[in-house]
Amino acid sequence: MSACPGCDCRTPLNFGIKMAFQPIVDASQKNVFAYEALVRGENGEGAGEVLGRVTEDTKYTFDQSCRVKAIETASRIELPTKLSINFMPNAIYEPETCLAKTLSTARKTGFDKHNIIFEVTEQEKVVSQDFLVDVFKAYRKEGFLTAIDDFGAGYSGLNLLSDFQPDIIKIDMKLIRDIDANRVNQVLVRGILDIAEQLGIRVIAEGIETERELKYLQDAGVSLMQGYFFQKPMLEAIQPVVFR
Image (cartoon, rainbow, N blue to C red; front, side):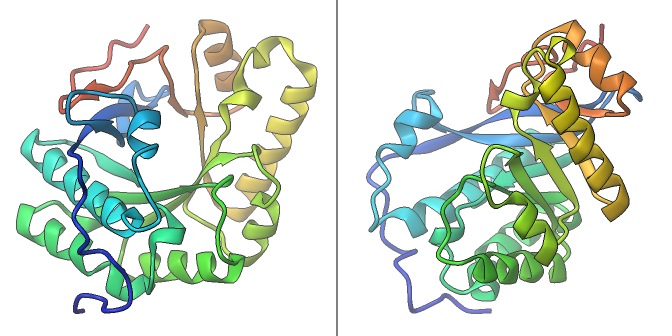
């Protein structure tokens, strides 16, 4: 794989980035399943501020830089679990060639590529669903895990599942908020869980903030969870999760 000549992935960013890490826990086993890498500014600025600096000209460089920074930082802090990386499908020119730098970074740092999860939000606007499916298939072929983030927040999730079944879906936090008292969300989430079980897809519930949400989801059969209830993102660091 060589550098892709058709995009602007060599255009330098005019700002620096760092990565924060938030655990995705297995609440039933009381251990950490993975850490999600979340982009931050050089001085710890939030993701929204960083993304606001990305232009059409720098989106390719930004996407590549985030992947490299996530893997390099995870290796440096000796991340002991899987690493989940968000990607921008509209910042991919050709799936195979755009993976070249990711693969070389994993090899250089010694980070096992089979422990890398690539996730894309259901709300992400893409050129075409067929292209996104091609991206996912290329990633799976190289040994990466795949995930759809914010499942249930947009309109394309079920259509995407009909064409490609990722390894993981992450249920949008809006469906999780106060789920213990919201009958409509309970019905919707149980429907998602049933679909995922029949398709052999693992489910992560994100945005857990209360013990009541945790208890309801555990009773519903969800074990993988993420949210402030367990731990907030930490800049370039990880620490043990205290299970309550």
